[in-house]
Length: 91
Image (cartoon, rainbow, N blue to C red):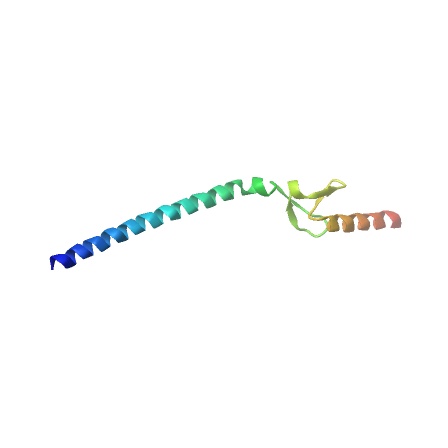
């Protein structure tokens, strides 16, 4: 009878320790996620701007810039400049 009670107490202590350790790891993960979200904008390029050609939002620091506009890629920039050139020629 006493042996069974001792085993039950040991198991409860082990489960309590496991719970404390798991909670500690979970809190560290939550804190790391919050730090990533706070600094994520800075690491990804800052403020978002909209590409006038395709409408995609891109980080301003990473955007391809031309003619006072920010583009998501050189392809969109080239297409927009070609369309602007065609419009200027037809006028």
